[in-house]
Image (cartoon, rainbow, N blue to C red; front, side, top):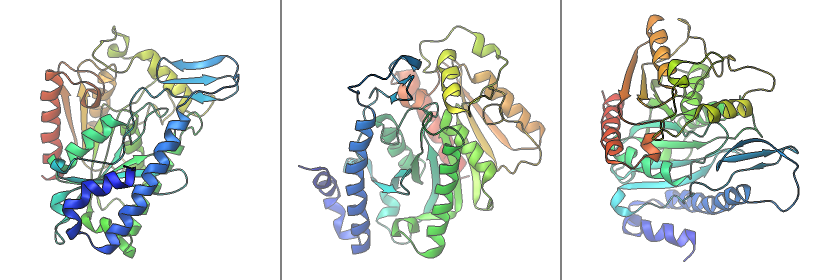
Length: 358
């Protein structure tokens, strides 16, 4: 059975609810899913010719060779937008440009009820700006669950990766996606956008994706519809080490100091230090930021830096809610399946729902 058949099998119980226009959009999205999944796999594959020595490497995640070739081993499986009917979510992929696509999650409560609209959450996944995909299974599972529990439509953005596309490429992609979504609402574009309450928009992300969400929030021009920013273990840095960065790395945390430094060398513009404002952003009272929720983890090397950021934002009059989850590390919500992590994920989901629906 091919990919489109699998999607249609999943949707069959609900087909009576879809208009012909939505069916047409879904068919186009499903065709795109098949094409971009194949493309992602090719980019992560091995090469058959010499590239010279490895100049940068994070074991198991990325190799950069002297000739500029980049290899990304498929350490995390990618999955299609298929979800089980019991998940109570409709998911599909959309192509936004030649460089950018997104995975959309619509809770059934909105998908099959013409009068229901839900807040829109634009999500940027992590990966140090250098690895990852909106099709990674860990993100697909987390966001499928979040869409239902937080009662929101989620657009998970697949932005361009460094070092092929150094910053500000990811920021530009994020700004373009938000602008595209707003235009769809005003010009009667894709019908699924009608399920989004575009006066009630949130930007969110984890790790490097939280950095993207923060920068996009600062840069978008129309902030009246932006109601909140959610930063999960935000990936920031600096030349001076914090106390938590100097501590022995916890095995329960996904990010090491060495990996962090490598990501920044690959992502920042060539020749700049980690005190560049995209890595170590200054906080100013003039920055236009809505209420911000920052999640931190006890064993994350970024904990102290994140705590300091919350303190600085408050000192400049910004509304910030900071939450520290004990007993877990960086990106536990997508990578850690322990019972401790499950309890913390449940707490995170509840807080996110209350933040989106105050």
